[in-house]
Image (tube, rainbow, N blue to C red; front, side, top):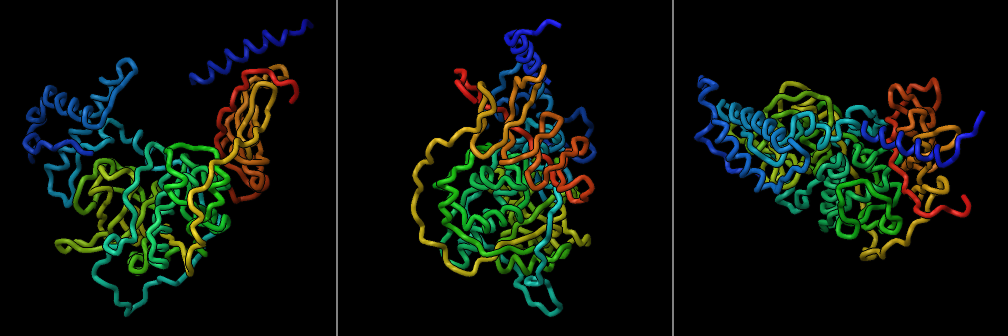
Length: 464
């Protein structure tokens, strides 16, 4: 049999890999709202909608480069505007409006901004149960609480198109308890969690607040937002900044589940991290009022409860979101409280947790110096991966690997689908389910991790 030349194989592989790769609010015009019983013919004309669309594009700095994309987005925008008009013409305790999500379908919105892939699918390894805030008969709680009034809540932040809501929820509760205990309101780094907390959490692919608390406890603290700023994308862990450890916590606990009274008691004492189902269309376009919209308990988004109150005999939670100050009520949501379902509206009482802090922070060392260039992990003569990752072959031909990926963990197992990988302590890949387990028969599973592309090396290395 003739041997195929390495050059021919390389050209063929590049072709194959290339082929595989192919695989806040606009002024609301109330005069155009649909009125009860009005016919569809009385709704806005296309010229009206187009005028609103063009104004919205300018306001949000939106441009589309792909051929036909602007028209495609116009049709989505038009459908969303009709949905908003029809809602606002009814008798509801909350209003919807044209925010920055108005050119997205609901599926696009859920996939990009809620972290639905991970929070809904991943199960906690263990729960830290506690009766610290368990509600008991006779407990006298205040009629309203708002931790913003006490200076225990930082400004509203924006996670961007990164599914890192879990990190923002966790930092919010840490910032709150740190202010309560030490008197200092310090904005801490979500990016450190996205980059460095990779044992179970998955950066922009989602995570859980309890795992973030565990990481900070084991690390001995977390850096500030100013020193380790947010980028809105997965990055390489900065070891120097990870070691800054400016704000610390001692432990964390879960609020008794499915009990809004216990969540209320917990909120009296500190801001609380909660998971909710936030992928609904009403949630996407929420502008103001007490939210009573349709939602279930498929938890897909991490937020922060910073208080509660009552308006017009309707009880509500004050919820801090991480979609920027242009969404909702300056970045906040008031969500109906004390509903009949024990889980609370949108499952708000199902997965509530909080950090515990008993003492002062260590002295602030100030900004950390830039990290030195990290050593590479060499895959072959042409590709490298970042430090503390594992090289996994993406495309193999005739026994040669022509395309490499990087699993963002050391000592990881590379799965046979050439796409995912598993942590060293959960080394068994289940490609069909997209999970990792400790052994073949173990019922305990976590979600598999996506690989990232390796960095091409322009010059051939002398040795590997």
